[in-house]
Length: 267
Image (cartoon, rainbow, N blue to C red; front, side):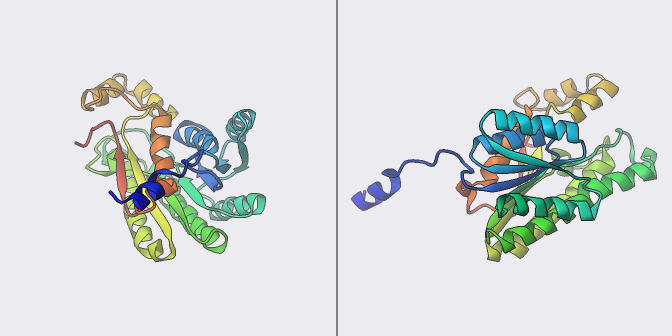
């Protein structure tokens, strides 16, 4: 093997963290996967702006990050409010001078049940947050990355339930499937500028949303685990790890992907 290649490939030390030097924006960061992601991104070297609707939760996660030596701040934001979404993204630039990466995790759920029993108000709400809100966030993030860092990456949090029919959560699954399409379209549109856009599709994950579903339908998590080769649900941090990699320069040639992080459920 060529000695020059060996020198170039192996002589330099690895970076201390996946996201060192980057400014990150995370929605739905007050709990669950979003909170785990905010903590992880900070540990990996990013300066993080957290966004969600509940200030008490945001404050607690932010203080935990700071206590561990990370850099973080938060802004209260309802994804259903377009002006608030744009203002939140702008806050990342105002506070840290740039935006490099974004994880669009914020979402809302509806009670499980067949499609004909979904109230119109529930359908409208899941559309406003899980699809329209993500579109608003992506649009604002692209503009901020373009105007500051120039290049960057966005990851959207979809669901394994978007990859097939979803009789228990039909409206939720439909919005997540549409989000997959937005992700792929954005990857094609902004790739020439050096802005990568991907999504992750988590399987059963022990978030507050899933625990509430299991409380309403006892045994549902056990049933899902029985159809998962790893025979367990994910911890939120395991999902956040996939998002961190996709946002990092280690994934520099990956865009337009909807990556299942599901313990093999879709294998």
